[in-house]
Image (cartoon, rainbow, N blue to C red):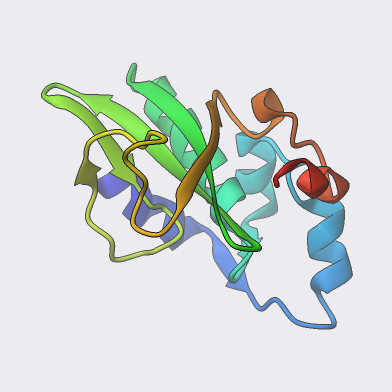
Length: 139
């Protein structure tokens, strides 16, 4: 999808390591799509929410129906987008640059591979995720 390619072209993927960990935690789940674009970067391995927030915003600007989806697997969490196209809903795993969208919706009975549904909403804030410390809500 061209939107995804353009996002990756415009954003620097910064390394996530001991030197950047505190900064990443200080911005996690706080930036709007406009702030992400203006800042011009995301952190490698910790960017799924920022990428989905930006992707959903661009899709909404095109008049598409969108959903922010938060998934969990053991102690890991992940964000993906669901976008309604002409022939139904599609799952876009924006954090993986080469992934092709999957037709369908994620539900309790239909997980995304090994990832199980935690919640869906408009964005991370709609799910109550407002900063790094709110990660404790996801059990």
